[in-house]
Image 1 (tube, rainbow, N blue to C red):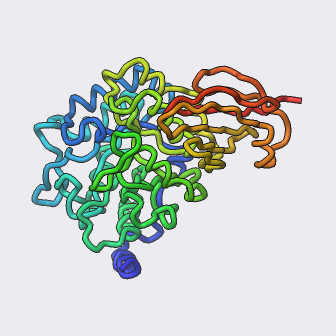
Image 2 (cartoon, helix red, strand yellow):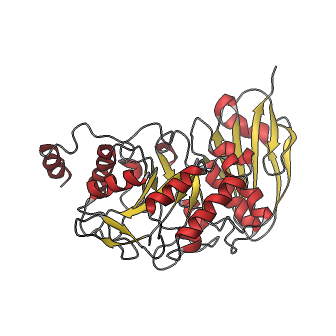
Amino acid sequence: MKKILFLILSFTGLVLHAQKFENLANTPPMGWNSWNKFECKINEQIIREVADAMASNGMKAAGYEYIVVDDCWQIGRDSAGNILADPERFPSGMKSLGDYIHSKGLKFGIYSDAGTATCQGRPGSRGYEFQDARTYAKWGADFLKYDWCNHGKQSAEASYTLMRDAIYKAGRPMVLSICEWGTNKPWEWAKNIGHLWRTTEDIINCFDCKNNWGGLGVLQIIDLHTDISDFSGPGHWNDPDMLEVGNGVLTQNEERLHFSMWAMFSAPLIAGNDIRTMSDETLKMLTNKEVIAVDQDKLGISAIRWMKYGDLEIWFKPLAEGDYAFCFINRGDKEIQLNQDLKATIRKFKIDGSYQVRDLWKHKNIGSTQENIKGKIAAHDALMFRLIKKQS
């Protein structure tokens, strides 16, 4: 099917020399998406207020830049097939909304689906890929989240390649976020198609659970990343889905573990809460620049799980400039006493020399790799450290 589709489009002159736009996601994208908090209850006023908040509350300064309008903005197509925004919810139109987001120094993201309809039954892009890409380009879109509902027997690789080609032909650089839930192992084929790809089914707002439609909790998503770290890197990222930090179900400990591990994975950091009204504690977590620096490290290496001792796991991630990050997570319901020989640990990775150990949540140096890390890890919590090479 893919070969036939390519031949047809090449004959019509639509995809000759098409490719994805490069240098748009050399580090994992950071931003906000409407779905986790608002689902279909979105409108122009909410999106504008979110843009105002991101521009002024410290999130933009911390690196967040995309405002992504998820499903339910669209209502139909006109007689020429052009996609239409809901005029009641978005009376000024999507071009005006994009202009407003850009006026705040932020970037505009939009949502569509590779099938005939979106997951909420709105018009999908199947058969309209080039037309929709042109429309999104005219609206000033910088990011397209492209879902995988109502796809029938379509080939995922061919479908996402087609939208990549449509974006390229439209001429406006856009980050292409492949959202097919890891069903077809996109990490094996999507490197030259999209800038990020979902690795799992949708996240649900819980720590350790899953439901009958496929949603997964934080721990279940972490477990699915133990063997795919090698596929992620600058310009092509594993995406474990949006953040549930600040949505009122996870405890602060669980949110800290969640955010720490997404940073260890070099995952896109896409907030999914109401950033207009969030607590100071939530804002402080989302804007922890030392943890974000691990996520945004230019090497773009995703962490590997080095060791598992019952409910204790140790994850390891090389960083630029010879630094390293370690994350200790407690999956269990009881506090863990920690007494880890870091000197022996780093020898396992053939790391030479002495390193300063910095606690990235307490924002302080706590010793060196010549000493054991001692302390407690609360239930469902994480400790995250940066090993900084001592200058000789």
